[in-house]
Length: 166
Ligand code: FES
Image 1: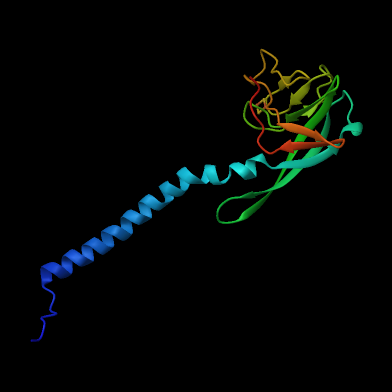
Image 2 (image 1 turned 30 degrees about the vertical axis):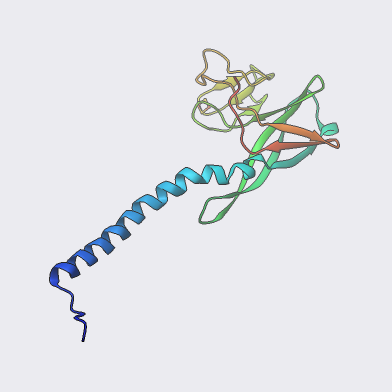
């Protein structure tokens, strides 16, 4: 006996709409899943430390160093270069971000002639103390961020995730 392989119009529409609907739902759901899981996958990358300087180069005067690393953006690998201010506070090494906490311009050490012992942001005249604390009455409302660091065999290694100072 021969089977009937004909598909009714109703079945055809059901199959087609189910397929298209499933495809569209996957297009919506997959980016959400990736967005949720990606930080977990990148946790190890965030823990990577980058060799930036020798401890014996450092002084109590902040000096600018380059922190260079690769960042996986999902669709390409981005080369990142950040300027970091490194200095000694007693025996402790301090690594401050150069990104102004007001609107993100670059801060420099000692470039304001009236305040040579502070970080200065030329964009809106923001100022920070040497320890990174924002000077009240200037536009920034929080301190410069600090990088996590480790000293290994006389070298300073920095994490790539500068954190707000608490
Ligand atoms: S961006 Fe630095 S003071 Fe505004």
